[in-house]
Length: 160
Image 1: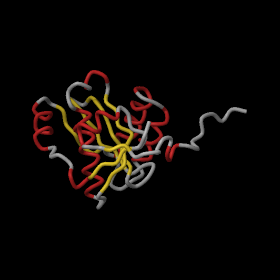
Image 2: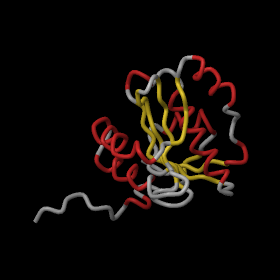
Image 3: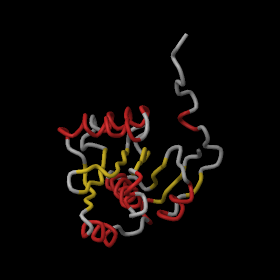
């Protein structure tokens, strides 16, 4: 999957989306330290060990680089930013039952807004898929020849 480039100075506004989700009882907010083990475990169970590792690193950042979508104390989805590289967004994941409710769009915007607040003009979505979602939601553009990108030398198996 390729990396994508996003102009952070041209992000669509998230206000109406966040208000609509809030009316449906879905909150988008930054994670807090006491939630770390629960969130990392959830990410591992719903997505992958690699994403759980990235999520765990998000809790070492100040402010914490993990943003959540929650409904009635239930975790619906998450995104992390500034983990693999300072200007990277990802991973981003939404549990199946919330995928058609724009939770992913809200998390994407919140993560990119956090990068913009840190002073970046551009954000990179690393190893993005599905590309069409990111293109449609935030005008992301594929970075040519970016696959496998920063992940090219990542360990696949340590068994001998």
